[in-house]
Length: 133
Image 1 (cartoon, rainbow, N blue to C red):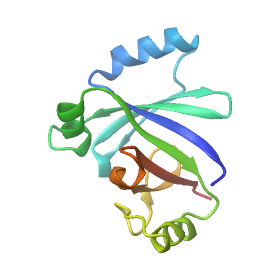
Image 2 (cartoon, rainbow, N blue to C red):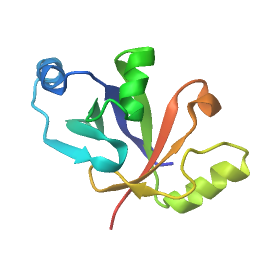
Image 3 (tube, rainbow, N blue to C red):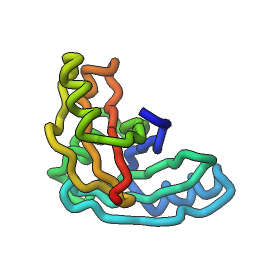
């Protein structure tokens, strides 16, 4: 793993959260993007070498909507940049970690992504992400 790529924050109202985080960071988000496979819309802020990703559900049936109902808004995941996502999935599985994805899938911000089950990392959802070449 190379670095923290981004921190994902679950929000109920993306427009309001964008205003809040723009005020906190002193700059606007640089991009919004819908990820249909995850039923979310994302908004990204750059901060140094990392990013903050705000996530809002586009469907009440989405995993994110259910998470917000159960836990409320707040920290959703920490994403780590990797050079070879397939090798990292294999490495983590060989170490005995349970992943939610056996194969990477397309995520936001031109990334391939895979998630590790939060029970494997002290309740924190871990995302692996690799830039799509």
